[in-house]
Image (cartoon, rainbow over all chains, first blue to last red):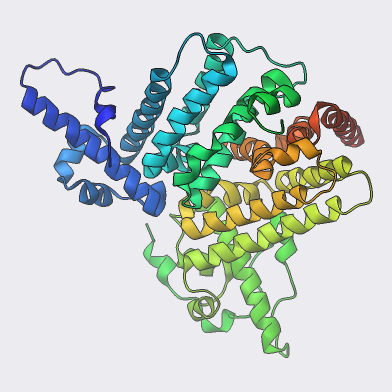
Length: 214
Length: 250
């Protein structure tokens, strides 16, 4: 599992004892990775603390040093992977890009991450909607906010709902993940561009700008 | 936790007998002829199976899937443990079978509405209306099917995905899909995903009864990728009329 970039998003610990700090961080990352693998195997409900500590090769006491319970650990895993995706998308952003290009780049970066970490992607896209609907709503709002405030997209008069667009993307990606087709996720970039643009520019322009049906 | 009393086996004589109490209205579809003396074995078996299916759904709705035990299911169905294991391997097997039966019922309702004569977008709207009505009529079932699905395990969710695929592939088969839309890979998932994601969200939020009112928006979103704005919007209008008409009739 590659989790190195998640460490950068953790709040800094203000102690000069670097080795200790690194140990703590990687331990936490290991626990999050274990939560993702176990959930991918047995669902969140089926996952026990014993599964997590087994996967992470840590003691139960160590687990409880980081998290009060299974749910807290789950939420931390969701947040950590979402911020990883967010960061991956931010890294490829350029302010001169037209919306379609900006979405294409962000989607490419995000889907590549998901393809590399299918267990994390499953946790966020398949498990989180039932375990923690509030997190899902908040990232949906954040996505819409980026489309409307940063990319300055205006809602089309057709009345299509951007919240539903996020739902379409979620179902599409979840379907691929559930079918163990995570490796193919990067091929879905045109669909994601189309889905994201649909509520803003309408069917014709969305197809065209996504490079579909030209 | 399983209370010790739940582990007691029902008396053998209860097998095939009528369950105590009324079957709630939401499960009446399973109130098939019950086993009586003189009925052929197959019928008794059939009826016991149906009762176990209804029972696993009721128990799951009340306690959640993981907290439910086979003992709870037996108690609710008034059926013996031996009978249970004659029909099902374990709790999951029973739950998956119950879900298959429910999905089958939902699917046949949708198919009936969709197969009515008429223009394709109107038939899609009617199929969708049937699905939303079915879910709204039985909120417990909708909740068990959707919200509990994730807690059951890989088999249940793959069944669910297959069913969703079947629903949407019907749409893809239509000759009325505009040629440009054919260029969209995974078109059915993108179109149907709009409905699925919203319905799932409302069900988990406990808003099942509001689903039929969402018919206009969902009709539009479902049809949009297939037929474009104009045709989708005109079907949305038809759906609005239908919702108003139904509200007036109540």
